[in-house]
Amino acid sequence: MSAPRAPQPIPPVVAALAGDRPVTAVWVNELGGVTFAIGTAPPTEYVKSYPGEFAHLLAAEVPRLRWARAYTPVPAVLGAGPGWLHTAAVPGRSAVDPLWSEHPETAAAAIGAGLRGLHDALPVPDCPFGPPSWVGAAAPPDRLVVCHGDACAPNTLMADDGSCAGHVDLGDLGVADRWADLAVATMSLDWNFPVAGDGSSAWEAVLLDAYGVAPDRDRIAVYRALWNDEPVAPG
Image 1 (cartoon, rainbow, N blue to C red):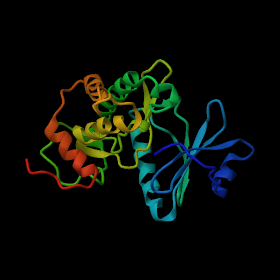
Image 2 (spheres, rainbow, N blue to C red):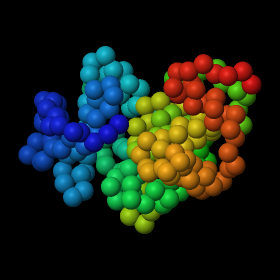
Image 3 (cartoon, one colour):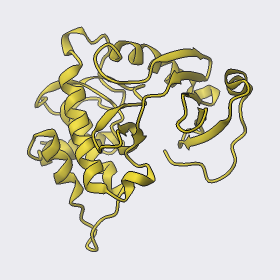
Image 4 (cartoon, helix red, strand yellow):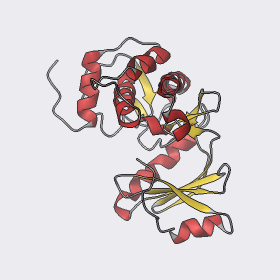
């Protein structure tokens, strides 16, 4: 997911929902989906629009947002239809907003603390959703939690004081080992924040420390392989 590099056509449903309010394309993803912001300074609503072959992904997000919202800050669903999802804005900026990309240590800490808060808040026994679609067969869990399912850095929102303000893009939320989220979250740091000259990153340690756990290299390797659709090395 990244900021658009070219103008994006506004789908009719987005224009209709916006009325006379301004519309801005703010995110595009590798599936051809575009997220539009409605309103300015700051936006008050968002609409995600996906191509038809991926419309089911947005349909899956609707019940997950509605369930999770009872326990943790996530967008309120205002409406949905084939290939689109309309939500209220959660106050805050993405952890990869230019404000925070210049402060990667603060962002990494907010992502880690935010995931811990999410995992502690969402009740596993009451979760009606199975594991994230990509998890598959994995190692015995360290701790079962309700995982975000797509814990890449952009999906954590941050308040202006540097704390976690909430989460977005919960279409793959479900019960799994906490390392399913942590492996992806730490991996994504190097996609969004600068690394040292030798290619290493200090931000993984910051994220895990803020979460409150020591690195589990075996589980990190397993879940990163599953995320990347690679063979999982035997344990």
